[in-house]
Image (cartoon, rainbow, N blue to C red; front, side, top):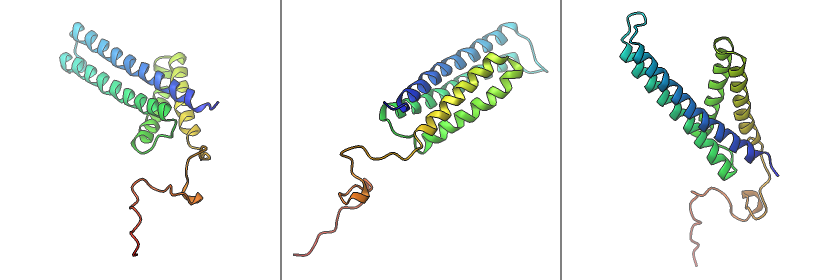
Length: 160
């Protein structure tokens, strides 16, 4: 059995949980700032509260979209392509940066979590990166049985 699908499922689950956690944490911080009614360097407390909530929603949706890409990779058992691959690479970069910052700001536990998620995302990208042999019954352009692009034009009609 291939290790690819379980890795993709793990990445999808972890990123969905992280999306919910990030959104909930920022929402909670927004409520705390709003209830304390304190200003930071003259900033409006209500604006800081709303900004925290909006940031939490945006980052939660970003991680949920990355988790959706990982879920599609797991369901299709195919490498992510195009925008999906770019999203997963950007999520890996974000986790690397968050891991670097979290060591000093939060502690080693948060750092280890971020690096584990980074490792899972990189493992997902690397395991689907290898060129695999086509499965039995699949056609390739080299075997002379058609194959080719699904948008290739039909063969030209021949004269009688």
